[in-house]
Length: 564
Image: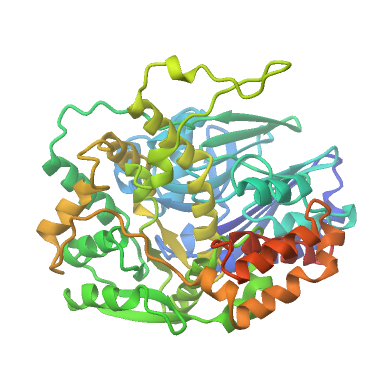
């Protein structure tokens, strides 16, 4: 993976800001520690930090320069295009290639489409990019279909900033009195809505949406959403055999790398499927190691994952997440995450990526996204549309009781919401920040666009057992012989248990009694919160997620936004 920072000075005084921009750029080095370079073209500063994965040769360093039809282009790109070799074969007739990188394929495919934004639709992969046309003084930028790779922007009368992360923007703007976005904090607390949509947790800093392309021309910004809804495919050759071949190929495609790859493995079906395909079909094993995290004095995942891996005679490492690890790292990880930590499992993700990097792995595959493809979560299957209205003297009227039921349409709408509004935006953010904190590229095969749309087609296959199609595949093919045919078993974690009692609970108690929080965030009532805390501690309220949210909000308010 890589880091991108672009600064457009609308007042033509860039030379006064070079020192600040170079310091801001250093905040992205963890995203690309292998090489970094900045270029300055008139009133534009473009920086790139590279984590070398494809074509390790220096010829593939970025920003990549391309001369084409008397115009000059500078490309800064972060991601992986898994079908880049196939696209390259088509482009060979028109372009001479100087590298074996997917970066050069990206820029040449853009040019072959006459610089039209729909050029991204040819790509299978994850990406964020900036293309500077220095001849026309235009800047094109964009993000992949499900937002696996991040991109943010800030715009005012003096400048436009585009960045892979928020911290460089905060650093550049630190004299502008950076502020937390209280509305985003409130939306997170009341709706658990975060990392989706345009807004971030920082005022004035916006997110480029998944599947969105932006253009800067004459200092104005224009946006176009290329992809925002799953295609409801009609597949003619829809046999299970063909789907299984397609599934295998998709996973294998995600193993292309000039660096070693590793696995994030749980005890569940989804990551086990990825491991099975790689163990079985990928000849170049890269000294493959699986990493599984579990919790201190608990046994939720590792023992089952170990049995699975050993049935293939492969290697597995156990990573332990302790209460001390959470307490010692929460504030640091909030800064790295640039928003709330989703739960204690994200600490496991931070830790396995850190260990994988120490062990020499730059690439890791994980199994997120498959539940969304098949609509497996109860909240997807059971969620009903709620359309009502109020009259002057009557509230919450609804006419839905006389509407024809269309359960499949509702299911498809819910799946779309999970991909674009609810779950996947949180997942992709978590994966990117947790892995890139250790300079590890984490890949998610089940979020490849064509795989998602094809899998969604199978959403109604014998729905009494979720993901039955995948379970049948594993029942037939896995070397680990167990009963794979059963409904989804939610693997618990000790988050509520640790919040309720012991060292972590004592730590949380200090936080929710700290008046600092209530001075900073006026929408939280201290007395009501403490009463809820007492009920939770006494097992009168079973779920302590509200207190997890409080810890997140507390440490977000602790960030000194003018000393990034």
